[in-house]
Length: 140
Image (tube, rainbow, N blue to C red; front, side):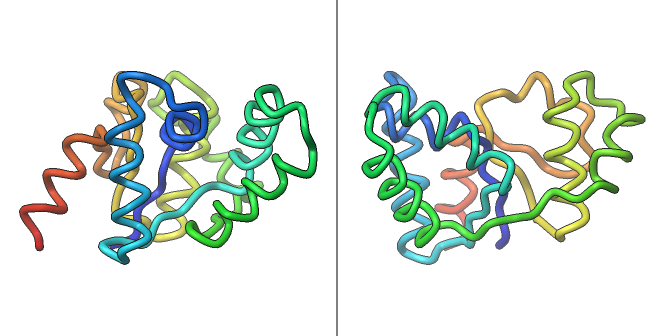
């Protein structure tokens, strides 16, 4: 299964944000155990870098963390056509619409995010971390 992971899930782990980090860590473990193939958008990695660097205040350490993420997750490019399609999307949040369009174009099976309310009109399945983990456990 090919799964696009939203930025918030990655930051939950990197910043140990309670009460979200436990499920996010379980997703990381499931990716590491090859229960599914996890993807990040290339665009989200710049946001992850920025938010992580604000905590570490160390460019070398932040790049090391990103390198670890790149070993665990595949990267998904965002193209111009994704942005153009997102403009006319039924999703109200443009950034989320771009993510959905990138996911559709790249053949993702679903998106995992904590921000479900902005994805209500998404034309592909979108799961919370807990719902996706339950789905994985059912399919084992």
